[in-house]
Image (cartoon, rainbow, N blue to C red; front, side, top):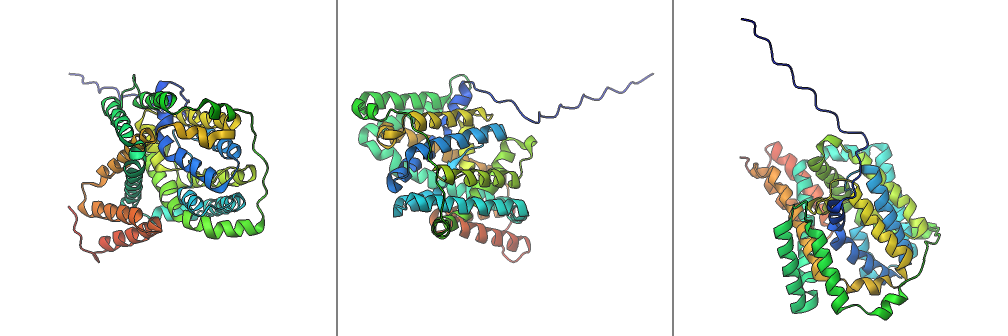
Amino acid sequence: MDVTAAPAPPPRPAPPVRPPLRFDRNELAGAFGDLGTDLPLLIGVIAASGVDSAGVLILFGLMQVFSGLWYRMPMPVQPLKAFAALVIAQKIPGRVIFGGGLAIGVSMFLLSVTGLIDALARLVPKPVVRGIQFGLALQLATLALKQYVPADGPAGYALAAAAFGIIVVLLGNRRWPAALLVVGLGVAYALVFKLDLATAQRAIGLRLPTWHRPEAADILTGALLLALPQIPLSLGNSILATRQIAADYYPERRLTVRQISLTYALMNLVNPFLGGFPVCHGSGGMAGHYAFGARTGGSVVIYGGLFLTLGLFFSQGFAQVVQIFPLPILGTLLLFEALTLAALLRDISGSRAELLVALLVGLLCAGLPYGYLVGLVVGTAVHYAMRRGWAGLGQH
């Protein structure tokens, strides 16, 4: 009897080199996934440093659009967190901010073109990267629960509870995206209880960025005061952890740390000359966009369009007008971004040793000054010591 072999299945088509962008309701919902992180930082640095809000907002929006078009995935652009915290705490002036931004752009460019960033990526093991993400999750959750959710008293708690319920019920629902309803709830609350028409009218007017040329002294001061504390966090979260989460969500894209560090560098080689605040990519931002429905770069382009509109037409009173948006809503969005990041530990939960390394790194990152540098170094050392049998945490 003739037995004919079954035909082999046709090969799966390769993903397109330039995947298409989408601009549907899910991309729109995903666009708000990083709002709880970005908006308070931008408000804080504008208020503390006196930098022109038009330049900050317009350049932030342009960098979002650039990232969405370049990567074709929800690759976020975020204000540099350690940088922003120092600016807010010490009220550092704009000229030093722009000098520090240029310094970190040049540093990241050199790491990219020399290949040193690839060597670092090969050295740092996955449990350490997961630990960095977990540490960021702890910090975001703490910020959400201790500062944002309680901000408006009993009414704020009720608002946060309503937003939490909406997200729990609708998270992952592609027909009724949770973030759209939550942001809509926040807008409605602000319009009813907080809007001051006189302040809103004063905020309207066309503004454009202005040219800046960082001086050598400001570049040096910014490098020592701002860029140096930022670099460990950038290496850990903005580069290594972002590459890992991109591999988790888009394994077919094979994104490299050199690609991410190069666009990080390019953004900060442009921003300082037009009054933009220094920015990075970030694993938390991608987790937030993705959790609320984003699957392409369309969400980031939409998000950038929001900040472009604010910067071009509403930057005159941005800090005052935007503060009417309720912090409890931002806190609830931020909490789910933190939960999404923390849940990434699941892929190493089968190994007790790897999980312990990740938990150690996360606690060091969240709890210590220069925690991301300490966590990166200590976690990597402990991992290799365990592999060589010098440390006996045990593996199962």
